[in-house]
Length: 145
Length: 145
Length: 145
Length: 145
Ligand SMILES: [Zn+2]
Ligand SMILES: [Zn+2]
Ligand SMILES: [Zn+2]
Ligand SMILES: [Zn+2]
Image 1 (cartoon, rainbow over the protein chains, first blue to last red):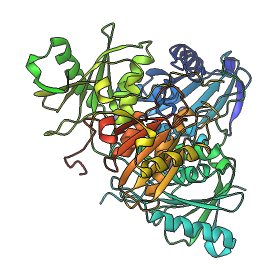
Image 2 (spheres, rainbow over the protein chains, first blue to last red):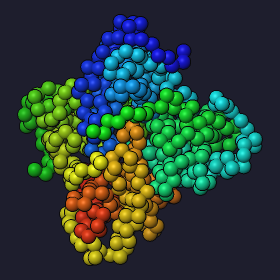
Image 3 (cartoon, rainbow over the protein chains, first blue to last red):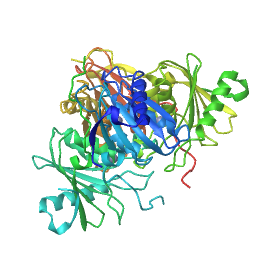
């Protein structure tokens, strides 16, 4: 399916909870430089949830986005395959999508539906890791000689 | 247009030269960790060309890809808008596409067609920055308070 | 104190446990590209511990080191000030120190002693975030206009 | 020598010129998010100079600092060993030092003296890559199996 906008109430309870956990994770955001708070929550294939927030740095390129924060929490807990991802950022009238860096990071751990919402959790933009990173970067030949 | 594969000879001379410059830029690749050499060349709207290669680091996350190398050369020379991008990597049977991090970096400086080739410069995959980064990350509301 | 090497047994039990948690965290390392497993554990000022491992990516610059993984877990759980950090990597005869990117990331959350060990946990190199990043990058003047 | 502050006029003409080139490079800074302009200039062992500026991105972690910009220009031009580095940033009353990420990047290409100045080019803080990154991250054992 191409990206589409749906109402929060029409989503599975499982996905509704994922989005609510992203909202909760967002409260811990450390973002004194952008004042832009983002929360994410990833559901692994075994059903465990990991919330993450953006963590900025005085040297901007050193910061880590909410999506990658949630993912490393899952990975460092032994998870390797994700079932779904929710992201809630600060813009109230526009959907905030993951940056390309996070798309690349997520694509390492399989395709998954991605649910994007504004803080009011009314409308939800439904897309996926593979839709967000078409023609993804892949090394199929061996160069480790 | 969706991504499509064309023969090198069918491309504009301008694009053929861009791809050849990417091949040349690739020879300076500093990639002792991956042994994977990549070259890129960006053409600015005023016609100037900037070639770049990947520059790796003992701490892998610190490296810079060929595409970003070419772009910062253009930006630091005062350029801000790109007209086309060529990338040539090491895989001989597969097209190597830019990683998500580079897609994000490139998207800051406008949409542009992207030409991807293998080292033999026979077939060329034609796509674009916007096709490679759909639903791109954008802040449209003001949070700098 | 300048960096110094001490025996594991001479360290506080609290620090011994921190190093053992770093060893445990290391087992989840996702490092198919470097084959170099790293584990870290950070102790917050309230005594909670967060373990982290390195998480690599097909695009090398996109990966996240063990130290930053441990830190974002603490930050996203509401912690802001760290009390001590332990890092255990794969080299058996050499101490592996944190990369400059991680030093920058850690320095955002205060100075703290850093304990570095090889997998055998015999000798421990004792240093600190501030020793590892002298003359640290700081913006003391306001440019957010 | 430990870091020390000297007067611009007391420096070699070669270093004075390097600092002036960093000031020039700074004018191309693309920094709409931080409003913090940085310029750098690196002198290679063969005497060639490469200037760089910071290039920011809407996704903060995707930006590239001035130091790394200057370095990739040199590397992509075939240079591998640097002789000296100059950095000029925006703070008028404080020295701005390179971030840890850039220190890591620079350390890949050898030790070199680093000259840091404020925009007025009066006082210069003299340090070096190795002083800025003590106990630098190094892999001395082979794990590429
Ligand atoms: Zn991101
Ligand atoms: Zn890239
Ligand atoms: Zn690191
Ligand atoms: Zn930097």
